[in-house]
Length: 167
Image (tube, rainbow, N blue to C red):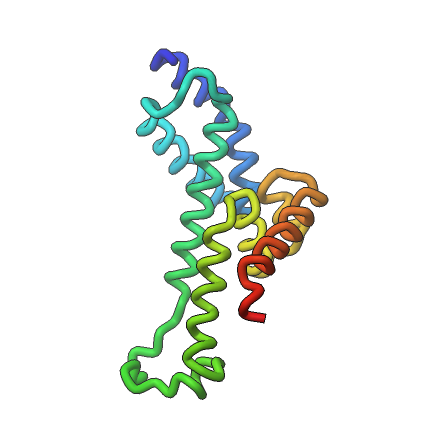
């Protein structure tokens, strides 16, 4: 796609992008930031756009991925570590909530199983695990409520098959 046509298409999408950003963030300032970050990322990656791909869908996917990555960064930043604690001599059994070191290992296996799900299943399932309600996930991902429920159900089924040895 020609540079000027690409930029014109991007400018014409700004209002739609802002609406999508508002759905993802539920905050006008955060939506403006997400819109700006997405616009810059799309312009920086213009060479990666393939002409026969839906431009709007491509841009919205970039925005959704930026939102998800930013969300994960916020979660990591909000994780509190007590700097005064003796991290070397933690009482794993009493402090961790695990009955044994094997239980900790099993949790790592479960997390790996979740990470290995397809994006189609992993993203709604992870949002659900993070405390989002079905309707909030449907709004954020711009998909019908029934689709969200089905994908979470299928994610559970896939995880049960992968992790049957832990039950």
